Length: 313
Image (cartoon, rainbow, N blue to C red):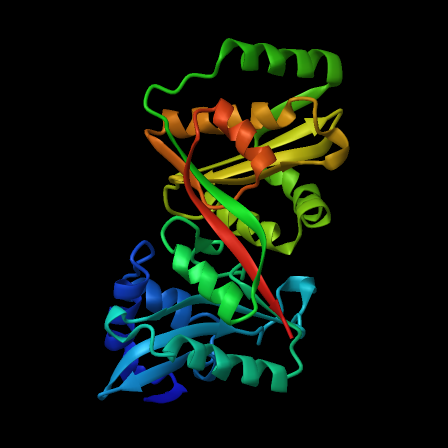
């Protein structure tokens, strides 16, 4: 067995391993090219492959920043792994350990401090390891490689067929407007100078990137399937919500204005807009237990639960 950096002719073999090993997270050829090979942070040396009998039988996709994430910079202490697998016919032979050892040695030599699996932006596939689909994988990562589970991320989805905003949400929105001066309206160009700094201040550069991507579609030349709502209180932006096609979120409210019901209004009004455009299913990949309870009020059900893991050097 030989472990070496990825080469262009490895694509078909690597994707065959990906689909056989990552059974719940299979990938198309085009998605591999756009989200892996064309990622600005991709380096072939950080995608080691295990080759035996002339074909790829295992891989680990590692990433370090080569281009800064806005003002968050290059994050020189951090590394990420977003996908890995060994073909089932070659498992339990130490190939996975050897692939990770290759990356560990490389990252440590660069002075990196942590390796996360897998909250990498902009091109993560899933938040971490599906606890139901790959229970043995989590044991391998923790017991054999020294990763620790930081927390769990919950993916949820909702059927929007016949969706209706409940009367209590309609009443809540009316009370918020009358008593608190809160309005919820579709985004306008006049919101942008205040909106984008608001997102960075309260939610960070990854949420800024998502919002920018959605807004570019709204103001583009082609018809879009995007909803973007802005909540203001006495003229000040205090929250927002976004959706594109079936993908819902992220959405958030200024921490100083939470527990007033503003998030519930944003959630239901955005889902209402989706249903009106005949988008009959909504999903997202990542939330915590507290937010999951809010989503359940709108009919969201759990789809998958992921373990987010980290190893420190």
